[in-house]
Length: 425
Image 1 (cartoon, rainbow, N blue to C red):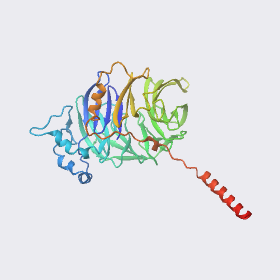
Image 2: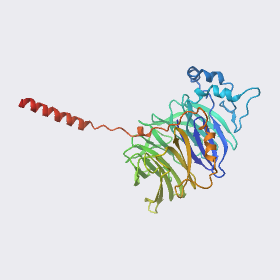
Image 3: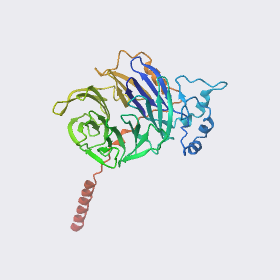
Image 4: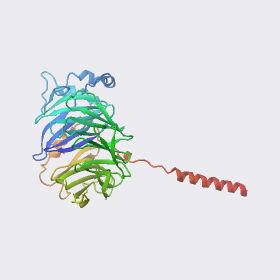
């Protein structure tokens, strides 16, 4: 099961299990939520879903508002039907419903659309029209495989979805029922994707240490590669119209001119990096890069990136945030202007913690008592019978390396020794 968390001004978006919450970081109120329909109604998948879980078929017509694609609205407060108990109807299909969960969530740049991908029994891309108090489901389109990254284009007219086999598809957000278009493919899983502001380039990174820059719309034409990482490239961030930042399992943070495929900065990190977020502090000059580490005494590193007049880049300040690493299993994080929000697992239950971005210490002010519990309750993490939350095993991101030469030389040495002993005997 995955947990996604992001900050899209003015709200924090959290996705876990079958729910997506929208939280205002200023007054810390939950002002909107989405719950996945019990049956996504995917064409060609319905019979398979009913065979694997007959309860879903029997309860498909007895669910709360917002379940059907094509226009039903999902309200914060769901009223039970007259003469019936909507809770019992939902509970009867719980065993099957929980097998489909939120994988990725992304807001469109104009703030009007929300894309949600799911994993599990029903893999799909759900497109919502976002409104102040509710979200309207526009379309549900099936995915052939679980998604690995999600990104809107700058004018919000389409969204890119990459999957765990390395394929990248474009989904139209104007013709919301249009079939996807296959744009490009990698030979390994794609961990992050960017789309340049002018929509001329799609930038992808994968498990095979590569950053690829592909021309758009002529995606058969590769513009450049940014090569140099020695392990999986876990995250990308767009800095300017020509520059990107990247992090990797090789313990480096790098800055590139992606148009030229040229490395401009390599900064050593204390541990492999598995997540990257970047905030702009001064337009096209100063940025804050936040990096989530893999199995380190410090969970996060905050790095101040500065660009000089001669187009050179440097890290001018570093702050390490412990975030009680080691006492719980951290899975994801996001930043606001003054806080760090981190999700993870504690005793196989979802946990959310808040830290001050200036000091790296737990936030002691501005977070009301009971607020974290309210958010976790809203995500269903504390419900009785909720499935255990076990974050993704990131050790599989590292490539296994085999030294066949050493084994061969050792066998050859033993064979020569045996032959010499036979001759002497």
